[in-house]
Structure formats: C-alpha cells, structure tokens
Image (cartoon, rainbow, N blue to C red; front, side, top):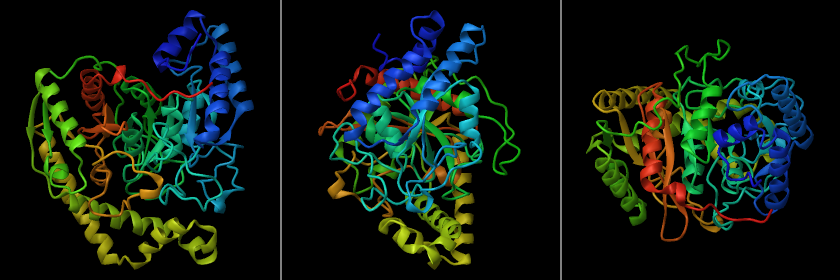
Length: 465
C-alpha cells in the first residue's frame, strides 16, 4: 500500500481498519527519507530506533484495545529547536552541537503522549533567524519544487520534509513568519496559532514577545488534527493562556456562506515587490469566496511599515538579550549572517523598545477593531515566490517578500493556505487571519479556500523512493 499521500485522518482510518500498521507507515517514511533527503537536506538527525520503538508501541497499544486518538501511530518530525529528552537539539548551530536535553519540550511530550512516531529533527536557520547560510555545521534545506530555490525560513527543514512527502506533518515555530513563509513557498498549510495557545516551554526562544509554536502540514485538516493535540494551558509557561480549546474539525466543512472577510489591500497592493501572480491569485480567491456566499470587502489597517518596524525592533532587542553572553565570548562560532543580525540588537535603546511595544498595542487594537466587524481577514502570505539561493532577498527590508510579521506583533491566529502555482512553477499561498483564540474560524475559511482553489488536485513534486 502506497502511504505517502495519505492524510493524517486517512492514516488513522487505515490503522484502525488494520490495513496498515504504525510500523509499516514508519518503515515507509524512513525509506522515503533515505531516498530523498540526501538532495534536499531536510533532516539534521533521523531517529530511526526511536521511530520504530514509537511505532511498535502504538501497534501494541492498539492491539490491546487502547486508542490514544487521531494522532496515534502517525509519523512526524520536529524543527531542531524543540527539546527532545536524550536526543540532540542543536538549533542548527555550532554553539549547541553537544546539547542533549534531559526533558522533552511540552510540544514533544504532547505529541508522544498522543501516540505520535518521532522520525527525527529538522533543519532550521541558525537559532531560527539567520539564513539560509552555508557556513553552519549543516547545509540549508532546499525547496522540493526546485532545489535551486530556498525553502523559506526558519522552519525550512519542516517545509522541505512535507513538500517532498517524507512526512505529513512537522513542527515549526513562527516569530516573524517562520511557519507561514515556508508553507507559502512550498505549497503547504502552516498555522501560527494565537499567542499563548500552545506552550513554548522547552523550545529555544528567539523573541519572547513574538514566538509561536505551530504545525506545517499538507492540508488544513492535518493542521487542525495536530493543533488539537498541542493546544492547551501550561501553567509553567508564563505566556500560555487558560482558554478553552474547541473541536477544530467540527466546522471545517461549513463553508463561508454569510461570513464577512476583510482584505487589508494596502499591505500588498502598494508594495513594490508584489508580483502579478500574487495579485492575480488574491483576486481569484476573493472572487471564489464571494461566489461561495461570503461578503469580502477592503478594510483599512495601519501601514504595514508600522507593524514591520515594531516587530523588528522587538525581535532584535530580545534576540540580542538572549544571545548577548555568547556574542561576547563565542562570536566566531555563530554563522556570519546570524551574528550580523543579532548584533543589530545592541544598538536598540530602551526608548526604541518601549516605543515598539506601544506601537504593538496600537496595531493590535486596530486589528481587533476590524475583526469586531469581520469574521476573518484575507491577505498575502508573501509578495512573490521562493527566490533562488543566489538571489536571496534580505527580509529585514520594509518591503519584505513575506507579509507575515504583522500578526506576530498582534498575536492573532494566522494561517498560510496554498492556492496555485505561479508562472514559474512555484507555489503561492494566501493568508487567513482570525480573532484571538478563534483558530476554528481560520481553519474553516482556510478549508474553503483549499477546496475552492483546487489546490488538492495539484501534484506535489515527485522523487524516487
């Protein structure tokens, strides 16, 4: 049985019907990794023994009548900033090559408790910021749609592994777009949940104010199933919110009839980097949503530059604070690009930081005001498709190729959903944003877009194995 295109729900159904075992799913995934990863460099570490042990445990439990739920026996992988007990966690950096955590991160623990099968640890950009870079201890992951193009960062290995059909779901993190950017550039679904929805304990930080944990996957349903496992209050994470978690799949197929969706058109329409392909796909998505019964209208938010400036100041100030000691004592162990970005934080004053936090509050209020009259927002994920490695755009620029950082600043749930292939054959995604802790609505609108766009009929890149 060819299992590489089975969704998480389909794998679960096959497991429960006895058509496959978790061990056979795992052997198949390990075989795809062995065949495909050498040219794509998604994995920093393949945990073969752990994966087979997890799979055999899942099969034994099922045989004994115990079912842990939809994720029981499902293979997955982790971005290599998630602590894993007894398994190296490097952050793709020389500084942590010998780091073997004693405990699992909360996310890793929850996925294990749900019966998941850990295949390994995935490439990122060093400390989830600088990259792609070739002066690090591991090579950068490559885009399966065209390996001469970047995957996007910093959840690069996660996106590569899924787009190459090595695994169906992989965990990422998102501080300025590091889930949604790779998802958009690799034809995947990537959700950044509401700030505080998923515990970050045991995940190496980049910016305490902006960091989010979330999954990348092949489909909206895959992401909904995964977030169901991850969401929930952690009293030991000071940013985690004690808010009830709904059934994320309950309304997936309700469609958009009667919903009001706002489009902050000035974000992308006036940006010099926006390509005709992106503008065209957003206009088509709007037309499809209207035809499906939604009211879609332009809305006004503060200038994109305000969101971007606040986010960059907060991110770089906090990142420098996290890495200051190592910057002083081990500067040459950082990659050149990472060090050049972290050092920017040294020039940020207390006044700069406080003013950025004030701007964050104003921006958040503005988004909340628009969402008080709309069920969701629709905007660009990125202004173009994935660039080549030899033409990487500096994402510090105000006209960033990604348009994701506003909702790290505000903390709203946001998801990139693939909709089409551009004229150059690379994927384009759109971004759906919801009210705080209303990921269910984000999934509902995203699922409608996924269906209306016809993306489900688009074939992913083919590889041997």
